Length: 402
Image 1 (cartoon, helix red, strand yellow):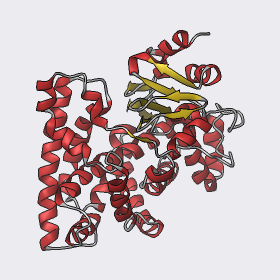
Image 2 (image 1 turned 180 degrees about the horizontal axis):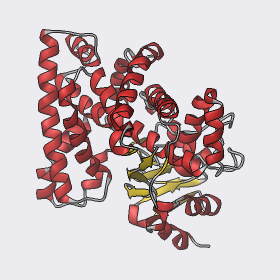
Image 3 (image 1 turned 180 degrees about the vertical axis):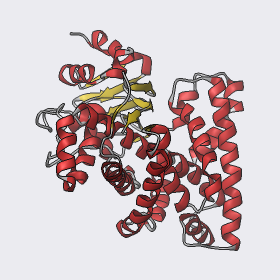
């Protein structure tokens, strides 16, 4: 079968329901494929994805590059968004990225994450208690998003009564990950500007009155000359957005996997000590980052194919994490699987700093659900998948009953 015969499957509605048959075909037929609509290469084999994640000649793509198809006037209108994104950790050059990463490592330590566990549990219990008498909820709206949003907001010292703004702002910023829609991108611009103004106010408050939070650590680093205010503001916007978006998707996607595999759900109820393993399997089977985009900074050879400089390379994490060369029975959701060498959080210099926090939040969330609503069951006819990037999706809603 030719590349052109398979690649169109990446852009069909059926892909939302189950992207894996197409991705399996691509991996078996052509693990490095040029996809014309993307103007980039797609990698689907685990070994190639691992090599690409470690290869410093493949640099992170700037999220704003997807706006290149807009007119000059439209791009000028969106300049504040592009300026903010260029300062986001992971979207700068490697030197600046590592500088900011080293700073954040002061805070995102295992001990810091473990200290947060009791508070995360309190927040999860409060969210479940708020809907428990209703006999059901929308997990996306009522739990998966507000839980990590509240956690990252507390870490940054954001007042409790302001946190609904965070979810509204973050929803608008999702426009950066979707096909260009100028109205949505204008809302994104407005939300980025509002978030920046808000964070600048918090920064000023921490300069006057430092506390034991992440924002105060940034302010202390600014005084040391490690970062400047624009970098602090831009990366707080990133943390407030990405710091809960990824975990929200992990929680929602993970619950769908449990519903679709009742034997594994029953096993987890019987053996709650498997929770950490279950979270790893959720990350492998349907992790929150379906695709990671890299750009060739210079000519590079991948899987025997020469790729020129300046080309987008799409790393299909969903495909790599179900590669039969690495994972036995890869389409089986198995919470006892070990080892589990998935790449859901990336690898190397750009490994996700919030990985330990996301794992802990998911672990706590599923534990609280099992304890507080033992009769949890799906309450939908079809899974409400919403497209994001190529071969990527997220849940728009997830109705459950108990």
